Amino acid sequence: MYETMMASYKKKLGDKKFQENELKINFWCGLVAGSISAAVTNPLECITVNKQVNANFSTLNFIKKEGLWNFCMKGIGPRVAYNGCQSIIFFTLVLEIGKLFNVELGDD
Image (cartoon, rainbow, N blue to C red):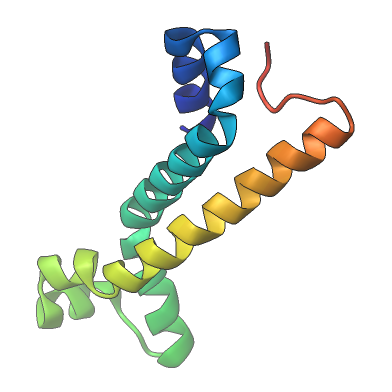
């Protein structure tokens, strides 16, 4: 998702304008990609955490008890915020370290 967003901005803005705003674009693409991936995988995280806490955990019983909405949305706010910030840091470091070694993140 990150690479697709970066490529679309590069195509839309052109090389010169893209390079002028690369850090800002990288910031937003990392934030969006990290936040969306955290939101989509949140139910899996909910299962994982509950299995670690309770050895007799049953996903079906949990959904019956908490409801499908809580199963998907429980703890989503902090997880999206944390993963969004983590993605910003990760992709910024990858971008800057790649520049040191003259390597681009994309396939082109």
